[in-house]
Image (cartoon, rainbow, N blue to C red; front, side):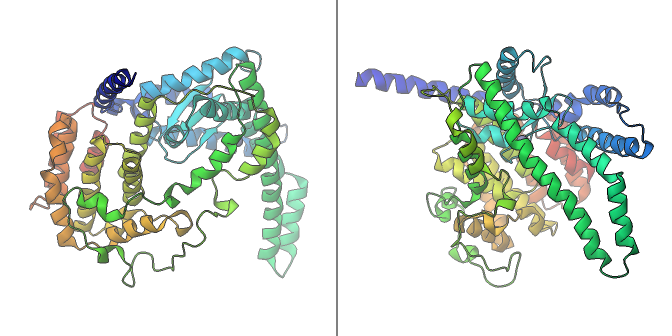
Length: 484
Ligand SMILES: [Zn+2]
């Protein structure tokens, strides 16, 4: 039995390492939304004509404004590569969507259009017109297929209940209503305290809206549970409580002292770099006593406890849950880490990598990313933008370890940073990297370490990278350098 177990474990490891090598390529450059959805974007623009709902011209005009804003929002997000069509993740989620559609043919006559949003935030959203978007941050966060299905069903419910459309209508109606005009006139007529009166008018509106939104949320939860049950997908109300913890990712401490992770690469490290000297990036007093309590208004998902309480009795008894496949989680996590890197949020990016290491993840892709982070920091330092690259996270969200890392990035002396980048050039992991990753190494060398600091030299290296790696997702990074 034990021998068999060992054998099984060994073969599992083999399969796993095989998988790791396969998941190296996350997606192709051509799967970024500005390329992949180029045609859909144009047809969407044509198809989305605002229906005429109001006889009143002003109301119809306002309504059309909101309608067109939404079209602009989505088409611009596509152009700016907010989305990516990563095949494995898309087909995994479409499989869930199909099951929901199959079980609810009347409510869901057409299959929703799915977008994978590259944001690391643990969220999904619906924008009406049968479109839903799921963030890679959510895919990386959820543990089971059923947990993901609940959130997808919730977003589909918003679309079924036409929440976006109704919100646009209500807003258009309110802003062109007699009541609104009268209250605005009253503000303008009053000689005193115009501003505070105006605030009152606007607050009245936003208060109504937030009450409406809360109602919409519980309505969408209710319908989501129905959709799940009709599709034979178990519902578990504790998933709402888990969502509550999604905001405290960076409040989790590391398993080892920060130093340990860095000296593993033979990098220089001095404790003093992680201790706040005086003035700098974030001189506000950081008080970590209150960890674990984030103001509800700062949360991505307020009301989680309420949502749990309201739905607890509808949980499926004795349900079996399906874990999210490791390859899907692996891809989503790497995608969100790359996206944070690309957006120059270097501290959260490295912190996420260290958290992966804490989980026992030994994939060398993460070592490659640690190199990229230090090279980018040094490159930013050379171009006098170091602070912009650090990516400061508000203190409510971070652990003392995170604060140390942020301080290290801020205070590590330039010459030591250079030394870090040089040390990385000869690390053992490079021999297993793909040509694209080695190509990015060369490009980052040019940016950070090349004595020729000219823009021309940098643009040339970027161009060269793109020519040699036409399908690589890293071309996005090279694009930016070339354009500068
Ligand atoms: Zn919602």
